[in-house]
Length: 251
Image (cartoon, rainbow, N blue to C red):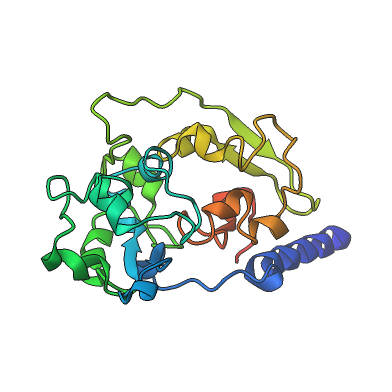
């Protein structure tokens, strides 16, 4: 019994270290800023303030696949060649910000985007967060549960024809590299609420199970694999149980 107790203490300590510093997790901003970006590929070069983009304010209305599949936004900020001309022609932000679906590219609206303020919209967030299911990390909103409970009904396409995701509900069990860490589980069904298969396959993950090379926490923290989303937009990897539900130690 003493040996078993010692093993459990070591495992608990290891998992605490794993979650709270061993991996050098990036610091989390306040909930209202989690997922906010400053788009500054060209703005300051042209004498304008950077554009503030809030994921939480957009995901209420649209799923991730709309922007990152249909509108061709890259997953990493400042890598998509967005220009004012392209927007005015209905590409990128201009697909919705045309004065009909959302506010348009007119002079009186410039500061709604070109404000350089990562905290822009804080008051709106405070009202929104009170109406949606809570979570412990990120925005402190459980966005998937918000869909499942009907609190939000984001559109999955901007086109006239209806879109239905592929009915693929397979759940993957992913064994950890360390024997003391419980396996991670990946739900295709829950990711289908937000993403298109092409968002992950084949560029981020190989389509065949266990054939994605270097799939580990080190690379995830470098923004690869799950880290493409689960560092600064989807729930952060600080929420160990979000992927490793069988972790029982307090962290």
